[in-house]
Length: 574
Image (cartoon, rainbow, N blue to C red; front, side, top):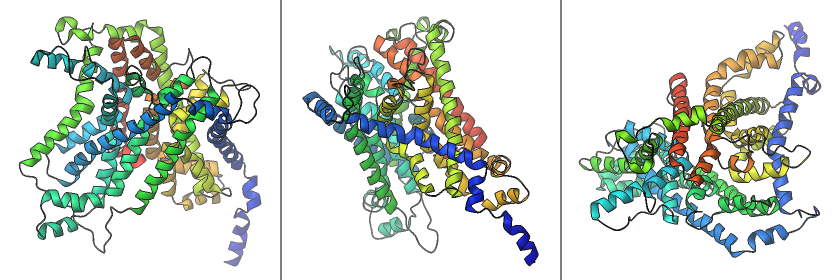
């Protein structure tokens, strides 16, 4: 027995042999790529904010210029008002729906869940275009209906306002609050609610005094995510705020990139947005880390639905109202415009046409190139993010290098960096010589990969932790290296996780606008940027058709994920 152990002893990897392992070259390369993607742009962003564009010397002049004008400060204040309004309204939409689906006998729960998922995958800028067609002050369909019914001289809805912007973004952001709250409600047993009912409390009082306080950290977490999502958006504010003659931070940053480009001032102006985001994410993690919504006991608690009686139909009506605002109405007018010769002529057979799709798919070479670019860049991004995250997750979970937790932090760091800030960092780092990547597909793929790396890493790390290292050791004992173990053991075991993560990276990359608008060139335009350009031209028929192509493709890919990986693949990989 001792001889056998002595015979096996040399195979145990020491620090020296691990460093000499050929696979370590791959890990070092992957770590270098990770630093290149994340640390370099962020360092360059901070340095640029203190750098004189003429001499390169350190200065605070960029901050003075960025915040020395009243309109710049007003844009920052507008952003805080806008984000706060979206968060509150998203909470009013998401919390009641989550409670109704998780805790009551409201009918049509499956359908409402599907509509919430639809609201989640509709790009905010596409929803904004739908609401421009619905609530434009002159030609919006809702205003036309109001005028027809009341005989008034003008409509009552105006999407081109702060209130309009808040509503438009809130109806696409409330799924964050819904997911956080429903997930927390599913963890809470009915024992405390039953006790309240026994003591004479009614359904409403029990809900506000017992149920919702238990899930308050989750509600606040969803509210914070909605706030951060709103203040980082570019598309919807650019479509609505600019015509309404007010600025938010994202649109003001865009104006810094008008000729002449003032990247140093843009970097300085982006700093508060980055600091606010970091603080809010810290606050969200602190609140959720408390897990105040869980109840732990020696036996599992039963979760029973609350009987609403006739009020269940009122609750369903409210749910359908929210779904109408977020999905039904904007998608209805976008579909009508996509198949119309002129969207303002309304629904009629003589107004139906496939010309918009024919024009995009077979006649307009720029649209064809934008469609190809979108799916090629998104596909490459998904593969790159999965490959990099899998390698880093392997290094971290197997502790192949010292301070491996730092690598995990770097992978998750883009989660707290708004896309628009990340784009400015990439522009500052890689647009100038010697790399000169501005306007190339390469810089878009690098920016997308960095932006959505946390999604891929979360899935890769979770899957890696589920695989016992003994299976790899068995391969190595039989003479295989780490790369062989990864190829023959880990990859087959993790293929479902990785396939789900690929889809979850591909979908947001295909619709990304906040990063792309700063980095695209004439030959690298993607669908999201082309949609924005078409909106400035007022070509809503072609714009709607292009948006439908993007949306249908997204739905098809999501359906493939549901079919091949399981209905909960988005939850398991998110």
